[in-house]
Image 1 (spheres, rainbow, N blue to C red):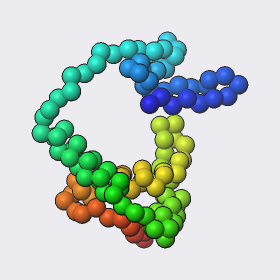
Image 2: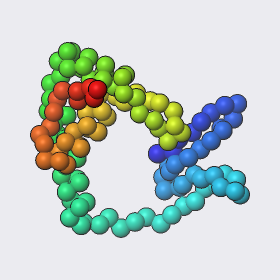
Image 3: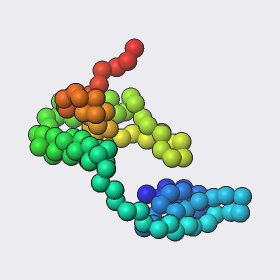
Image 4: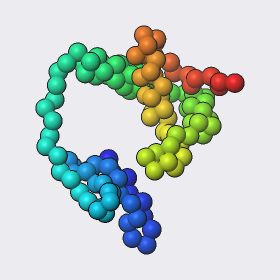
Length: 120
């Protein structure tokens, strides 16, 4: 995904769209096209896909109550993340659920439908 900052014109473009990489160097802004990589089937990739599939299926099969949604949204507002430009962004409920639970499942913990507790 490329990130574009707009002003009167496009101020900055960083990232990738359709195999084209947008970069800025000493020579100015430029686009670079790289060859496609072969999809490897090693054990770490299979493990990562299995973990992601587990979390995504848990998200898809959950029926959310309004109280649970409010708790996650409140947690997301208190804990913004920075994007590639360093700007703070609030994650959506789905993104924060997946981000939090990917770490849990990778550490052999069950999927949690409640947001993490505050660290004091």
